[in-house]
Length: 175
Ligand code: GDP
Ligand code: MG
Image (cartoon, rainbow, N blue to C red):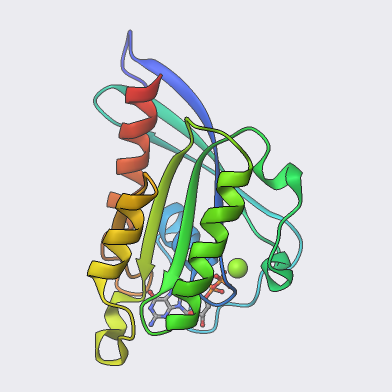
C-alpha cells in the first residue's frame, strides 16, 4: 500500500532479449513467485501488473512481456512506446544470447528515450557450471551503455526481487 504523502508512479516496463533467456520466467517469478522448468513460449501478448513500494515512492509496474516476436530479432514500435524501464536479458550459459543482448540494447537506443531506466540481466546464474559469459563482460557492457547490471536466476529466485526494486528506486529518483 502507498504510504500517505508518498508519490505513486505508473511505469511501463518492457522485457527484451533472445528467446529462451528467461524473460517470461523472470516475470512469473516476480509477479507470482513461480517457476516452471518447461516454460511454454509465450503465446499472445503477455501483460502483467505488480506494485512495489520503495522508500521514495510506490511504483505500479505495467510489465510487457514478448509474445515470441523476438524470434524475428525486432519488436513493434508500440512495444517500446511510452516505456519508462527496459530489462535486457541474456543467459550466462550462452554467448550467443549475450551477443544478441548487445543488439537489443542498440534497438532500445534507437527508440531515443534518454531517461529510460535500463537493466542488463545475466540470467540462469544457477547454471554456473555451464557458464559461457563472464560477469565482468556483462558489467563492462552495461557500464558503457548507462545500464545497471545484475545476475539473476528465475529458477532459484536469486536477485529477482532485487532487480525490480532497483528499477523502482531509479524510477522514483528520476521522477
Ligand atoms: P523467454 O523465451 O525469454 O521468455 O524464456 P522462458 O522464460 O520461456 O525460459 C526458457 C527456458 O529457460 C525455460 O525452460 C525455463 O524453465 C528456463 N529458465 C528460465 N530462467 C531460468 C533460470 O534462471 N535458470 C534455469 N536453469 N533455467 C531457466
Ligand atoms: Mg517468453
